[in-house]
Image (cartoon, rainbow, N blue to C red; front, top):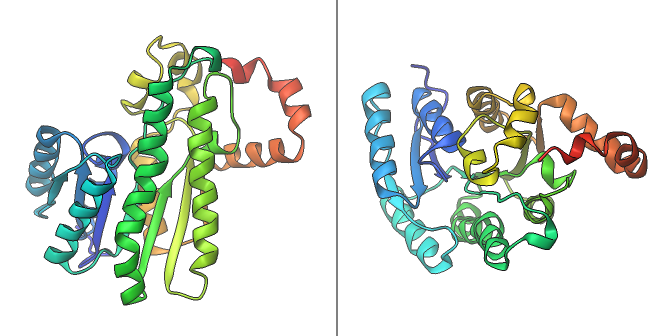
Length: 264
């Protein structure tokens, strides 16, 4: 086991499964202490036990719904009281429900914003004063290529991830004179349970399966980002180039790739 992250306290939201759990495992493998946040106590306990068995690192966990701002504030206070610092916050909690805009249910829309946007805001505001006091820290926001290129049936999810990018960019500029880094990670589709909820039909998963990233690859890149912070990480790189091209020539891309983008 390497120890690049030894003595680092890394808080990960949405850490009970998927990419959040993979990141937690990899942080522990490098000697860091991952603190796991999610809603399911059972899944968190199982994840924490597995990490201890496989790495020898204790992975504390806290059951919290990031959409509940008061619960988030209380949870982070417990963490800071216990560990006295948070070196890295990885805002990973998030979900999607793919629907045409006309069919989107208002409760689903509110739910996505509560977790993907307001949850990220609550966690960041809860940890930022302590980071400012130490003048040290790293906030990593898991956004999405969808935040740069909205596609059919993902209007609301894309809107939430566009918000994540806007928050990341603004906060980064606010903290420019500090030693606190803000990074946005924009992955394409990843092979995780994410799509079981997002795409109940299975059509999207089937159509983009060959483009899906392995969670181990995404986690590896995020660990590298902790070691060498930068403003933005696009995965895969070619997809980041594609979304940049779209921003420059939106009409052209929509005309040429319109049918491909409607594969949900």
